[in-house]
Length: 280
Image: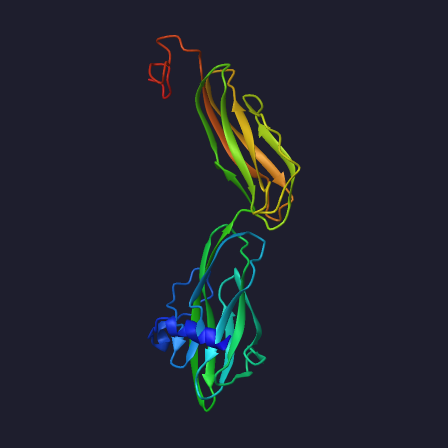
């Protein structure tokens, strides 16, 4: 394992930043430069992107390794995964050496730090894993850091996110198919699907009682919605879906459509004429 880590370390670019080039600000968007090697001390990997993660569900942990190729012990003074969406835990690495504050990392050894991404809002996050340490017989505090990133997404997603049925003659119909996908790592219960107002909007396909966990067969469903205006004018509505997700819901898909009279010139015909919106 140590040989593999050292091979990875040798492949990493050497970055030379001064100590005051770094920020330990704890905001969720941190543009501080990253230092992944500092002489004989290396942090592997240099960064990690957790990708998309449904809110209120923690990711699997990602391991980072702090490698000591110095001739003296390292001692950690602080380990921080910055921001509200990232947390870190310390684990065992090398010859059973705990990666904990104050415990020495002996020459040639390494310790493991696991980071978890657990977003509670739908947005992108970018921050750092920051490690403060010093060497035996040298009180100067040193810093290492690695980039952390990830995006919080809704536990349930809809494609498209809205339906515009366009211009539809009175008593005719237009359709929109919405794909509901479960992004959670567990089965999702659908408590209710509801279209309003009905008419002119309606739901042609019923919702299932549940969707399988993300990545499995039947983790999504296609729902067909209809717009059939009974009068002239602009209509707005919504398709609401209530689930057992920990994220506040129902989820809302906005609906819009425009009703026009049956085409009789000089009314709106094929999208042109004095009867077409916007009216002349």
